[in-house]
Length: 408
Image 1 (cartoon, rainbow, N blue to C red):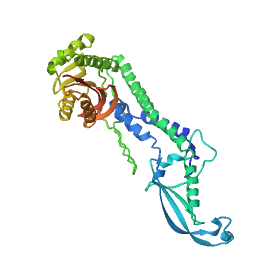
Image 2: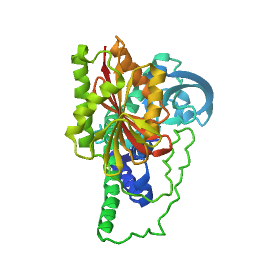
Image 3: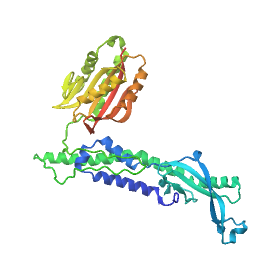
Image 4: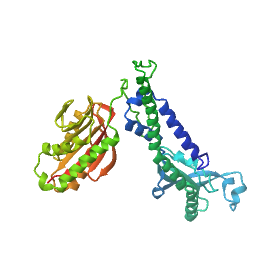
C-alpha cells in the first residue's frame, strides 16, 4: 500500500457524508418514525466512524530469515553487483503492531510535505506493518538507521491525517442527528398536512416493512441495525424539552431547599417530601396539573402530569437503599411507563452521611441496567441524565433524570 498518496481525505469525508444521507433518505417512513433515535444514530455513528490506526512503535519486534538476493540488488560497492547470480543473505524483518484500519493511511491530508508515497506491506491478520532490510554489511547500526529513516517516512503525515479524521469523527454524530431529524420532520410535516385535510389517511400499501441486519465484517465490530415493528406510526402528545427541563429545575430547587433546611425536613417520609414537590409543581403548569399517587399502567406513581388523556411526565420518589434497591426502583419506574411516556425522573432522597459515595454508586449502577442506552451530560453533580429504553420496546427511548438530594 502506498502511504498518503492514493486519494485526498476530503474526498473520503464527502463520500461518507453523502452515503449517510442516502441511507437515511432511503429508510422507510415507518422505520424513521418508529426507530429509537439514539440507537439508530449510534448505529450509523459506529458504522461510519473512521477507526484511525494506532501504530505501536514501542512494541516493535524483529526476526530474520535467509533469502537468495540477486546480485543487481547489492550496493554499488559490492563486486558481485554486476554478476548475474543469486547470493544468500540474511533479511531482518521489523514487525510494527497496529490497531484500527491501516488502509486509512493511504489518504492524503490537506497539509502534507513533498516526501510522501512510501510503500508498506502489512499483515491484516497479525495486525502488523512489515519492514524488511537486507543485511549486506553485517552492521546493526546500518540496519537501525535504515529502520528509523523508513519509520519517519511512515509517520511523515500521520499526525496531520489523524487530526483531520478525529475532527470528522467528532462532528459525525451531529451530522447524523441533524440528517435524521430533518428526515423525520419531513414525515411528521406530511402527517400534519394530511390531518389538516379532515379525512382519514390511507396507508401506502407499497411501504416496505422489512428491515435487514447488515452482514458483519470479519474481525470487525458487529454493528446491528435497530429493528422496529410493523405498527403504523401514530403521533402522540409529548412534553417538549424546554418544559421537561423546567419541571426538573423546579424539582431540583425544591430538593436543594430540603438540603438547606435540614431541621424542617428531617425524618419526613417519602409521601411528605413528595407533597412538597407537588405543591411547587402544580401552580407552575397548566398542562393538566400535577397529581400524586395516580395510577398509570401497572402501578401507582408518585408524581404524574397529564395532557388531556395522555401522560407526559412521570416521576418516582424513593429513599436511597443501596445499589440493589436503586436498580429495583428504576425497574418499578419503567414498569409504570407506556410507549406514550417519553420523559421521566427518579428523585432519590439520601440519608447516608457520604453523599459523594452514593452519587458515584448511582452513576455506576445506572449503566448496569438492562434498559440503559446512553449517558447524557449531567446538569449538576447530583442531577444525572440518561437515555433508557422501555423493557417491552427497545426502540422506544425514554429520557430519565436521576436527582439525588441529601436528607438528614
